[in-house]
Image 1: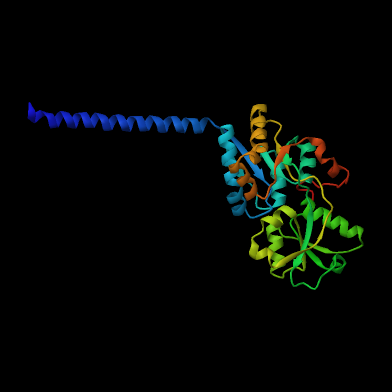
Image 2: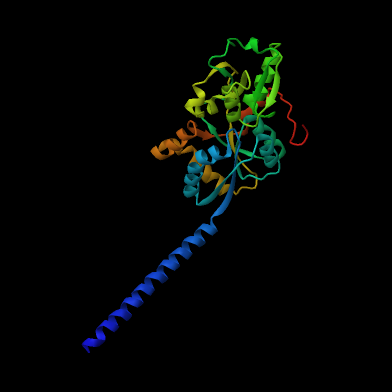
Length: 289
């Protein structure tokens, strides 16, 4: 009888190990099913920076929002702003973060609905030059070539061009694809000046920013919008709104905002961007440039 105990113990241990493995398999299956059941939300972020930097900066926020709302938020962007505009025009994104001009136009054409915006910040366009540049007045840019992100970058391209023309300052333009590319090009001396905005200027790596200075800035306007596709279910939209506007109320949420150089978010309504509409800027849809 004594000799049989090790065999019984071995059998008992075998059953225990098998039960543990089975339980682990079931837990994994349940977790997989829960993940698979989570609704996928395609999130489009305007490519003001490189895709790598955008993914690194926005990924933690999207993971946080996904946990709050039991959604699978997938980060997406485009190689450049014109390509991004084409994708927005096709309604490829469920949740999108884009500039005020984009919001006004794609609200009218696709039906994107305002969700949230920064509460106390205004959008300001900048013209930057190298710190050691002899250019001290914006009028010295006459007959110079500026680096700008893209034709429909509102505060970094559209506003500076329009206001320089109003001041009878005639400049050439080279579109380089993103705000980040503008700053790098000016820092490296490839262009005498370039356009950006206050938020991406603050996000710029210190090594590049220390080589630059702000020469001129535009008047303030309503900032970028978080907006949702008209087909997004109301319950998803409401949860995302609550999660976004509640970020500043917790240390973790505040850290996520700070990482993106965003201030406290508030619920937005379509009329918030009437100051953009009053400019009567004509927009050329993707493919018509």
